[in-house]
Image 1 (cartoon, rainbow, N blue to C red):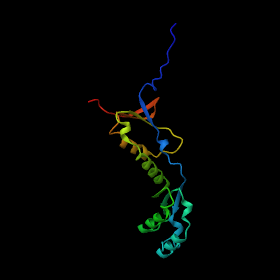
Image 2 (image 1 turned 30 degrees about the vertical axis):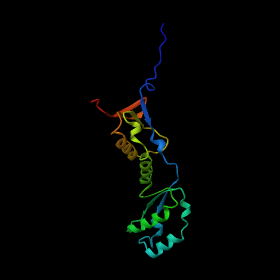
Image 3 (image 1 turned 180 degrees about the horizontal axis):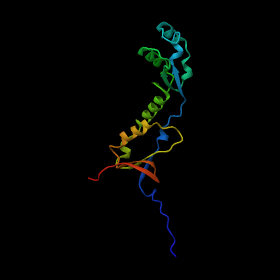
Image 4 (image 1 turned 90 degrees about the vertical axis):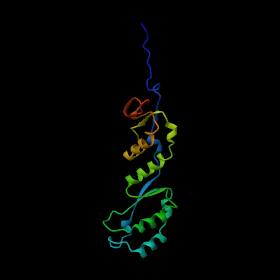
Length: 171
């Protein structure tokens, strides 16, 4: 009786796995809500706001990822977000306008921008679909945009169970 030989087709497939989890920035993510700077919860007084900016201890944001927003229904002048950014920038790792979701997208976009697409030229790439950290859908869209022009094929999932997305014709 012949022994059955088990062949690892995944190992011999030539697939390259790209795990977006590897590009997750582990730094703390915080929201700076301008509602705390509003007078009577309605308006932002420039003089008071500028005084606050000078007196506040911005070092508490050292190395953090900060999303700036205002959760009150108030009209905030654009310059207020700009002044706040000027105070946060020297301390924080990243500053964005928006929500924590917007911040997550920005962190991933920055990380994806460091990927050299040429390293994947002609490759069969599987973008891993499962991760232990949250990966925004926008990050999957961005990596697709970056890799599609150079890869031979692009798949989603795990090497043992993929969803084909794109395959370059051999012409």
